[in-house]
Amino acid sequence: MDEYFHSVRLIANRCKGCVSCTKRCPTEAIRIRGGKAHIIESRCIDCGECIRHCSSHAKTAITDSFVDLERYKINIALPAPTLYAQFPLEFSIETILGGLLKLGFDEVCEVARGAELVSLIIKDYLNRKDIKRPAISTACPAVVRLIQVKFPELIENLVTIDAPVEVAARVARAECTRKYHLNADEVGVWFITPCPAKMTACKQPLGCEKSNITGAIAISQIYGDLLKALPHADKKTNCNLASWVGIGWAIAGGETSAVEVDNKLVVHEINNVSNVLEQVAIGKLNDIDYIETLACAGGCIGGPLTVENRFVAETRMKQRMQKIKDEYQVLGKRPLMEYQKEKLGIKEWQAIEPRPIMLLDEDILKAMNKVELIEKTLESLPGLDCGSCGSPNCRALAEDIAQGRATETDCLFKLRERVRDLAQEMMGLAEKLPPPLDKDSEESEESEESGKKEECEVCG
Image (cartoon, rainbow, N blue to C red; front, side, top):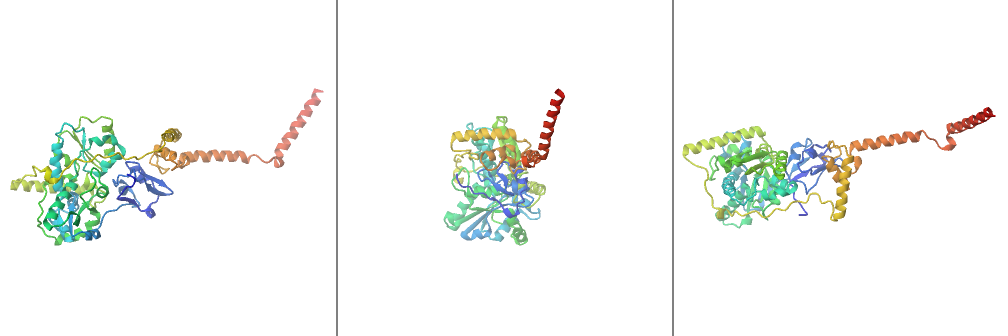
């Protein structure tokens, strides 16, 4: 792929050239050059870590807006379960869904319903004998791209099942085309997203040629208008509400609980995920059946496009889940227990190709020479990984030097050495004068000659 779509963008006039983003990026996709951050497109996975840690707010996420809804006859809102945790418990889930209808959407379909379906599908998937273990969740697109970029040897471990939002979108679009007698392309399906990676997944999906989602609108963008609409929203909707099983996918551990797998590992926060995937890559976790991986700390409720404090949101989500669970017990209801694979249109993912993030050169001999240059340069660097050079660490700087994107004196320590050597050289030159002006040299020569004469006289 020569061109990439990225939701994460740089606002150049806000960037102060600090190195916070370079140090936090899990794929070393950011460099500071000319006093501004630059994002290497082939490395960026749109995890949003730079958005989260940029004190100058120079990183932002591009998502869709309400204006885009005008292009379609019918528009469906797909709220992520994370949306429910942004509001106090006094607003029920039905009220929040009613608020989305109040904002102008024609229909709403919970992504949590898709999560319930996917939970059942994954449960069956894990019973297969032909899958490579540990199986790795594909619910988080940032993690899928992390594997594509940094751990391509683990692509075979990915669960080849659509994420809940894709399943929910497919079902919702099919139902609305039948209900309103429209063509599929006349229906807009909009995911209310907690993270930029979901927006990127809409535009450039992995595992399929085209996403079922039309676009994504950030929770932070819709929050203010939705909060104002809630007091006037209908308390009852025609939606078939999801159980606590699907809603729980918003928090870390919710997916594996829904799948009901015992031999599991739950990892959240992208750098923690990267560390665990490194363990998998070297064969240390082969005894694990399933790994739930989430790019954001705490799960989707910690997404960079949310508005509520993660810990507050997690508490609210657990309270909502318990309330729904209690209601089910009182009514004698049970969560979704079966699904029809054919009706959902579930298909195996297409093969995902590794992303070539560091092609040194098309010419193999030149590439090998650059590898040697990288190793030689790395030996001469201090190895402190301070990031002051604008690269995240010394190895990255050595790679940039080999590629002609940086010089050795970008390293402050190497620059200091060079300045010190130049200063000593200048001091040595300052002590010397051109022969016509060097009187001290003439006097020393005269004294040497007179000394020789005295020696001769003494000797007779």
